Length: 322
Ligand code: PMV
Image 1: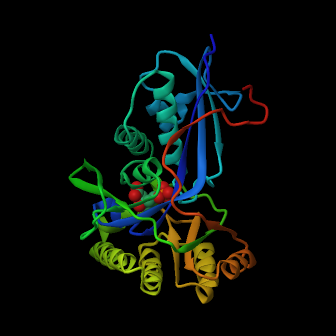
Image 2: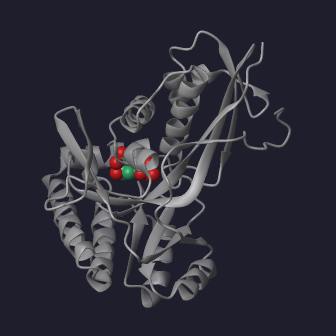
Image 3: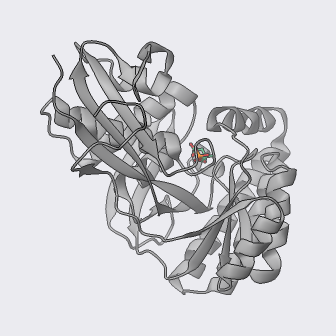
């Protein structure tokens, strides 16, 4: 009854500029990190995850991804990406699971098809988000979204609900980024919904979204000039705008403030409310120490992680049968 394992992995991502405003079709810049999510699947008599019997119908992403399967599966997952932390863990799960399932079913899928499947799963599970996370986790490397003047290769365009996102390849900058994790889990959906409610009630919130878009476009220009100082300043400015939108929190602000004396700039990354911040620096050790001293977990990111890809063997999950 049991088939062979089919295993795939995908990178997490962090956002240099433009989260939240990208939901409304504004520009953003994102890089894949070298932390990966690995998912293995095989045909089975019962649905299991990491050795436990599981009702996949209660897991929205997985329910969507397995909607056309006519049999049960065993599933193993292993994540280096902190979950619910603004580093795209759910998009990385959707992307790697879509690829592993396609392999199990002997179906060919292009990078773009995997991205669309992963984005649909994200949209189904957490509502009104953008395809930025899914694109970043599928493509790896670096990406710009709706960036005026971007000269990178066009990857794909996604349209939904009157919004349109054009993705282009971005040459990964030779810059050092340090991630600081607050350890507070904060799922994306509620943060995106909170900003949406704020925008409906208050035109000021719409102006903040416009300001984030302006800062992001300036950041795109700074990146092209390799101007770390300007880019850092813009990241810090973006953090202030995101704070005004109500998606930062004390633990994030503490880590950002602690990093600033040793950084060109710092900001929350992802949906906020907890999760991670990112600092642009050439003093990584000092930033790590500052983050640690405020109770955060630092991590020097190696940028340019490869996109979703097949793996030779399933992850070793304690207690689960391989
Ligand atoms: O927190 P994450 O890793 O899911 O990132 C969310 C990024 C947002 O711009 C806030 C939402 C989105 O769908 O683009």
